[in-house]
Length: 168
Image 1 (cartoon, rainbow, N blue to C red):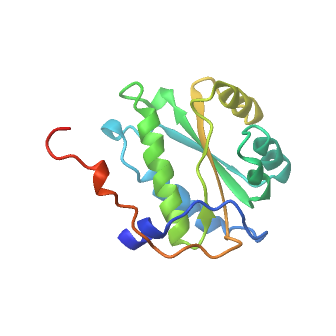
Image 2 (image 1 turned 90 degrees about the vertical axis):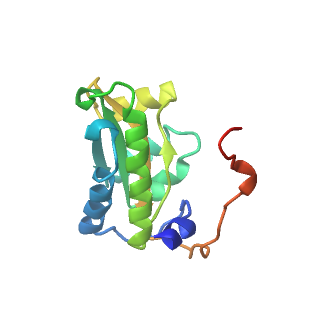
Image 3 (image 1 turned 45 degrees about the vertical axis):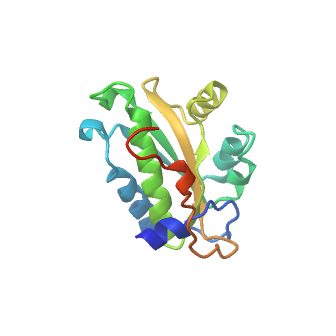
């Protein structure tokens, strides 16, 4: 597991090959097994394979033009109707996204976390594009596919200067 964590990298270039539906389901299963406050699981997901929709989504994030080249993307949303503890959906969805990134990597897929929340114009754009109910907040778009280039080997980013013991 530690090697998987250390070797995962953000991937923004993919082969054109379609991602197997069962692999997409495995990534979603990993997301839904993330920890959440009070086990509330306040997430919803939209799987996007339509190229026209991917092209429009790519235009909603000034740093996400590469999204149009992905064979599939998954929109991760927080559903405030499912919250037991208001406000924790952001942490819960973050844990789900990290599980997705690790699962994709374990399956030989490459993925990258592209932010929607908390940028208001992105939230509005994604909400409109995907016809989301008002209680469902678009959080992140995760494009994924088979990486065009081989990733780097596992390396440690451990930095002891970022660690304090007991007090600052």
